[in-house]
Amino acid sequence: MNLKSAELLRIYRTMLLIRRFEEKTVQFFQAGQIRGSLHPCIGQEATAVGACFALRPDDTMTCTYRGHGQAIAKGLDPKEAMAELLGRRTGCSKGKGGSMHFTDPRVGLLGENAIVGAGIPIAVGAALSAQLDHDNRVSLTFFGDGAVNQGVFHEALNLAAIWSLPVIFFCENNLYSEMTPISAMVKVQWLADRAAAYGMRAVTVADAYDPLAVYEATLDAVTRARKGEGPTFIEAMTYRLIGHMIGDSEPYRTKEEVAQWRARDSIVAFPLRLTAEFGIPEARVREVEAEVAAEMDEIVRFAQESPWPDPAEAIEDVYA
Ligand SMILES: Cc1ncc(C[n+]2csc(CCOP(=O)(O)OP(=O)(O)O)c2C)c(N)n1
Ligand SMILES: [Mg+2]
Image 1 (tube, protein in one colour):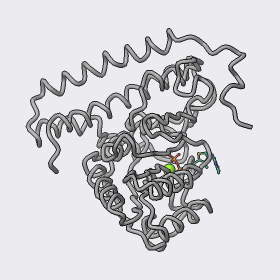
Image 2 (cartoon, helix red, strand yellow):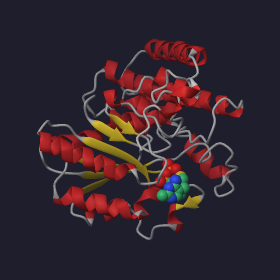
Image 3 (tube, helix red, strand yellow):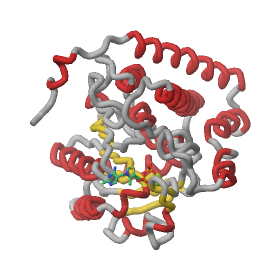
Image 4 (cartoon, helix red, strand yellow):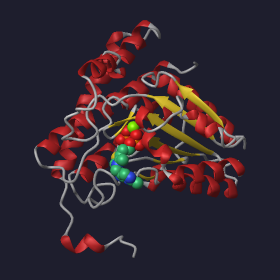
């Protein structure tokens, strides 16, 4: 691992910002200020940040309805993300997309997607365009363990393998698909085995609460893809620390199981590691935390002070 202190702190800063951002979205949702449904990524910050840290700004990415953190890690302005959630005109989708439809082509964010598995073929298409353009870009798609039984998952993986496309299939295996445990959906132990069956490289990150392990696995996949060595499937073992969505009373898992993962929370563990393992002074870590708090105030102020869209704008940017 040859990351410099500044890079390690940037990883922590982004993870912490995402955690604080998501906590704020929960508050706004409970106060009735965010409409629709909300699927926070609390607990899964290390996958979002570790993976996106290995990407260039011009690389493309797709993700799911649990994608606020991934979008921010890819470079989406968190002010525009919060404004989008509050339905404001300054939001990344002009306030018309909401929580599950963050999109920003300026940072390679080709979109969140509410349909399970639907971002996967879009990412394969982006990888094909990168291959045809010879521009060395890669494409990464985040999806959950629940997506691996969708037909399009298999079609997309096969196509990417036979055409050696520069795509990274990033599966966040958080052990549940909504309220269904993975053991009730899949007979194999490792989802990576499915991808290997299509003839691509497939790896499992056993501890995807460690952003550096995620980064290393992704960087390796990205390096291979840029060299023309084709796709990689990454299965990242992670866990969401709160319900599937706000309103989920979590009857399908035990408090003990959640507590075990909470004890390993990367937002707590990683800053301790920065000091103990990498020798970064604690004062620097505290500075980063203060910066994040100040940035969050600014994000909330920007979103709340932003104008509402005019009803006449409702059908602008709609393709039919
Ligand atoms: C095609 C399709 N089927 C069903 C749903 C309903 N649904 C929404 S989220 C979800 C669970 C997906 O779980 P997973 O892929 O593991 O992602 P996670 O929520 O755990 O991040 C389901 C079944 C949907 N959105 N799209
Ligand atoms: Mg899941």
